[in-house]
Every structure is written in C-alpha cells, then in structure tokens.
Length: 252
Length: 237
Image 1 (spheres, rainbow over the protein chains, first blue to last red):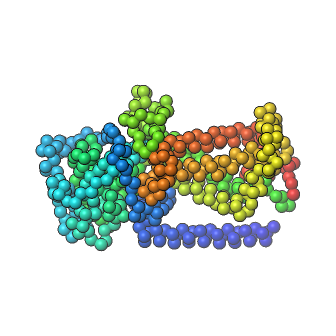
Image 2 (tube, chains in turn cyan, red; image 1 turned 90 degrees about the vertical axis):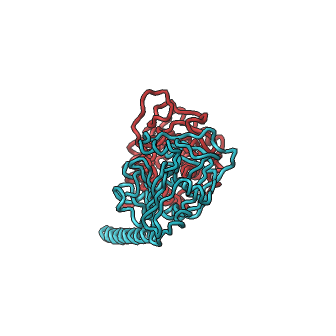
Image 3 (cartoon, each protein chain N blue to C red; image 1 turned 30 degrees about the vertical axis):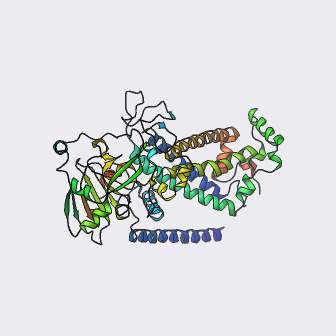
C-alpha cells in the first residue's frame, strides 16, 4: 500500500512538473509569436488566449465570406450610438468637408488625410456580413480604402504590432493586431450600398474589420496610431471594450 | 481489496468537469441569448427582419422590441468571456474522454447496445418498465440499459458535436477560414437557431438525467460517479 502511494506520489509529481513546464514553454512561445491578447490576464485570460491563439493560427490569411448583391439586407439595421457631440454636428453641417483622419505613431511619415483625399485612394468594395455580439446581423456592401494602403503611404515601421483607432465619440477606441490591420478586407470605409456611408452606420468614416464582430468596427474614426505595445493606451487592456468587460479579440 | 469501480476514474473526472462547464455554458448562454431573444433562418437577421420565432421574454437591449416596458441589465461582457472559456474546458475534456473511450473500449463495452437489446422486443420491454416507473434492477447499478446507452451515444456523438459546430459557425473568423461549416447549415443565423435548439435538447437531457438518477437511487448513483462504488452491499470484486 505504502509502495503504491509512493509511486503514485512520484508519478503525480512528475506529471505536475511536466505540465507546469509545458505551460511555461507554451506561454513563452505564445508571447514570442504574438499569440497572447492584451486582455490575456485575469480570470478569463486562459480562455481568451486559447481563442485568440487558435484563431490566429487557423485564420491568419482567410478571407471573410463575400455575398451576392441579392443577399444585401433591405433595410440594414443601424445600432444606436451615444448622442453625437457638437464637434460632430459642426462637421456634419459642412458635409464633412473638414473631416480628417490623422495617422501617427510608429510611421515614417505621420499624416492627416481629408475625406476627399481618402476617396481618391484606391477603393475596394465588398459585400460582407456584420454580426453583432448580441446575435443580430446584416449584409451590406462596404466601400473604402484598405487600411493596408494607408499604412503603406505613411510607411509603417517594422516594429509595429497594433493599430489603435479612435472615434470622434469620447472614450470609443479599439485596436487590432497587424494580421487584421494588413488584411485586404480591413477597410477605412466611406461608402455603403453604393452611396456615401450614412451617419447611422458610422459615416463619414468607419473602420470595418469583417473577420471580427461589429463592436470592433468603430464608427466616426478620426485617428489611427501605430504602436508596438498597447500598455500605454487606456488601462493597457488593448481597447475600450475590455475596460467595460468585453473581450479585446472579437473573432468569435 | 481492489474492487473494480463502477465507472473508471477518467469517466468520473470528465463527467464532473463536463457538468461544471456545461452549467457555466448554460448560464452564460442564457445571458447572451436575452440580449436578442429573436431567431432567424439564413445568413442575416435583425429587428427589421421578420423572425422565425421570438421568445416571449424581456431583453437586455433597448433596441429589441419585446413588448415589455423594461430592459434587463446587460451582462454580455463576462458572459461571453465565461462562455468561451467553459467551451474550451468542455471541448478539451470531451476530447480526452473520447480518446480514452476509443482506446479503452469504453464505448464498445459500456455504451454500444447489444444487438439483441436493439430488437423491438428488447426496446419495448425497457420502455414499458420505464413507463410503469418500475425501480431499476440490481444489474442496472453495474450496467446501462439500452435506453441509457442510446441516449448517451446521442448526447456524446450527435448533440455535443452539433452544439460545438453551430457555435463555431457563428464566429466570423471561423466562417472566413471554413465557409462550408456555415453554408452547410444554411447561414450564420441558421447556425445560431440550431445552436439554440441543440442547447434546449441538452438541457432536456440534463433534467431527465437528474430525475432518473433520483428515481434509480440518488445515493448509489452518486457514489458510483464519485468514489466509483454504488453501495457497500453491491460491492463486486
């Protein structure tokens, strides 16, 4: 009996040590390959890290499904937003001629683009699904500049790891990793269903990230910041979402 | 004295881990559901789309017309975190269980019904015994009857894989990597609707399972699934 317990004890010890060192190695590897999300700490950190790492390994280059024009939702549903402030209303009165998108951070040539400049950039149009974390969705045609083109124009430095984007609405900001930032379907969107992007859907300018849920597609964007670390932004959790309890990565 | 346990250690441990993660998935799933208690068929659906059906409950979002004059508190943040973390635990536990079951002959020996038991006679006898609420026989403390075997196989090899599949099909990233996983189901809203129904079946299974455990003898069945022995006087060596 005592022999068996000793053997069991040693086996348990070995398994526990192997498990712990395996986890430590996995953590180091995950960190090295950028597979740990900024909200990967805390109670739900393990699940978040598994989801983000698994989806990054599986879906790095995959394209969001594109639909036929006949599948476009009529009418689409515009989720409610906080009341738009005075600054927004002033720009709206001027037909958004004064709207600018500033690009700064780890770039060779920081810049600020007007809406008409953005509209002269190469345009990509795609019919994709927008799904809200609540469960509803719609399909629309979105037109805009691929974010990767803007990053090319400003000359992103090699150490860039994330793009932080902000809305004109205070406290509304998000970030994505370079996999999504350089993804051909990630669009700085200014058009929808053949016309200008309506205000209710984020017009004049919205970042559409079609491989993630709707809340990553921030409306009324005014500024992009390219960075190597999210620690200095807000509470260091990557975006405003984890600060209000929602996951930073929304691929699921 | 080394008595053969009623359930192997792997079965007992995976049973309880699955129980805990299923309860967490259920609570968080209900929380997520109440933010939009409407269901659709096809690729897309929202409050401007006619629903397939809607649940007569209040919602946690003011944008959903429910007929109730109030809005429930929004709990989606932690619910989504908990849902996916529990899903990882359930899936990994399930994989361990399935690999163990295949290698150790658990499915073949304990769950696959004998051909004779699958006859109409065999099945109707067991069903009749259940309908007459006859107490479980002594041998049933040591072996599953044919209804149990079929139900467990259905839960393990049909309902759980289906709920995982339909859950993943709602993920925009997974849909981009494996589009067929969504189109085969009829679209992302169809996947959500099927996910709901499979969850309902799993909850019905859970309720039936608990009721049957109580009817068969709560103490002996709990002993069997925890310490491995149904009851002192039922010991087999």
